[in-house]
Structure formats: C-alpha cells, structure tokens
Length: 175
Image (tube, rainbow, N blue to C red; front, top):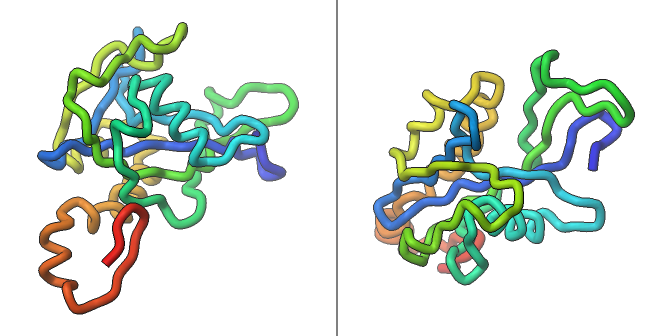
C-alpha cells in the first residue's frame, strides 16, 4: 500500500528480552543489520501485519510476545535515490507503525527459516541503543524516534514505583 505521497505503509518491530536487550537481525546474504519490518498488505491492519511479519521474519507467534507500546502516528523515512524503483506507483520511502514487544518465550522460539524467503540469516541480542550506531544511515533518524518513544517502557518496575499514585495507561498494561 503506497499512499498519495509515495510512502509505503509498513510495520517495524523492536523486540526486547528480559535483560532489556533488543533483537538485531542480519539481512540474509548482506552485511547490514536491522529490526524486523515489512509492508502492510491491502486490507490488513497494522497489528495483523506486525504479527505476520513477526512470524515470517522471526518465527514468533502472538503467545511468544507481549505488546508494550506502539508509536504515535507514522514514522517516515525517504529512500536514497539509488533505492527508488521506477514504475507506478512510485515509492519514495516508508511510513511505519513501530511496535515495542517484550519476548515471553525462550530464545529457542526464534526461527529465521519459517518463510520460503527468509529476511535474516543471523540474529543476536544487543544493547538498546546499539542499532542507532549500526543501522543503515538513511534509517537512523526513524530508529532514533522509535527508540526514544519506547525508552520509557524499558524499565516498567522503576516506572511503577515512580508513578504508583498516577493513573497512566499504555498498550498492554494498566495502572
């Protein structure tokens, strides 16, 4: 789904484990690393696309994760000229809904080969801010915006102590 401005609707996933490390996937047969992401198909919701991409790229099902938060609005990035394909409709970049998920299952639940065309051939857990130093440059600003929005959800125990008398709600948790 490409909008009237030329941006393809997409979902991106920040998957965090119990140690607050994030999933970092190496693109198959490439040297670049990234978070799981993928397009939203016609008639598909962002939530359905996220679960589909989570399974296709990482092998995880809804019971393997807890949704902690979703970005406010769309986060956009433009593709460099060399990545823009000619043809109609013209796609000049991605607009993404980002999902912040906590992994509930053991690491052995991760399967990179559930799709006939896998996205990743290797993965690891990295420090929360590591992707900002290592993602392809044209995605850096959108990664920064997503990670900054999600950072406050990284340590829920600290927030509970600080906010125990304040009503605060976010996706997946009520107080």
